Image (cartoon, rainbow, N blue to C red; front, side):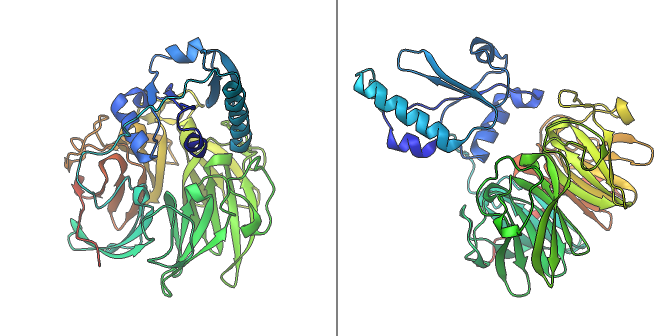
Length: 450
């Protein structure tokens, strides 16, 4: 779309219409944050009451509507869109209307949304990985890089000890300062190798921390289409928006948000051997049962504990569990479906979450980044009890006792030795929660290394 607009800067206008599913997505300030986070350069209309949606007869997300110079709808497509096909259709239309002298070329200037604050150390950090009480990895997603952080004692301040990635979006292997990522998210450590879900590159990257090198171990760099059950050689399979990873022995489990599935990557002598489907049909639905028959909804984080793989199934506002035995079964712990969400503590079917994206396990509990409720919640997989741990339910940036502290769309969590680290995404900071003292602090990061 952006390239075509550059070809026809005076003939083509792109307008995004945001008709929100979740209540928090209807707030203009939250939409503004999303526009900046994804570097959207065209105008976006907040269609909070679904007026435009109804006028154009839209029935699904996403939907593309093509409108001619006279305001007549001449094209309409719902669901996944092939960019090449859409580009060809628009190009044909423009050429046709140009021959009819129906176009009125005009340069329309748009001012993109930009942050008013000074340059930040972090920009929309999405995930954290705590190795121990002194070492932390941060997916600095908006800056397209990974930070290795050393924590001071007590854990109120930290020093950035290593920067992985040059800070510009791209797909490039090599030395840490030369490598490039594009919106990296989840991370997992296997020995001295840090694996990264490189979301917008549709790839899995491996960071050799000892050698200081980054390499691609899965994905072609292109977004896969129709990815359901076709695996194969890792570097020849096109992935779809890998969002999180988890390591189990020599296997890397992948939350493939774009295809609503869980995949696994096996290794042999530290080299990627095979990529295969583990669970999910590829349909976007909340279906339990045998792993090959189950369905997920944009899985966005993974946690391994208690003999299960736990999944933050974001779009269904659900937490799922997959038994890691000879006959893996998928079950839903919290969540009722794509359009059942809220902010309700309770047991089992009575509890509600709103777009949870972060998950970690510790001492028999799951800790959940309940993103759109601006909260951290706990879930006891044994009893099914879900309760609010941190947050008021309103966006904010207050430290202090758990019940008074506030967050703004936290996306990632990781816990070690009684310290819960939180990627407080829309606040552009990392928070540290002491589970013993029940207090939340903002982690102070020192200047970056030169």
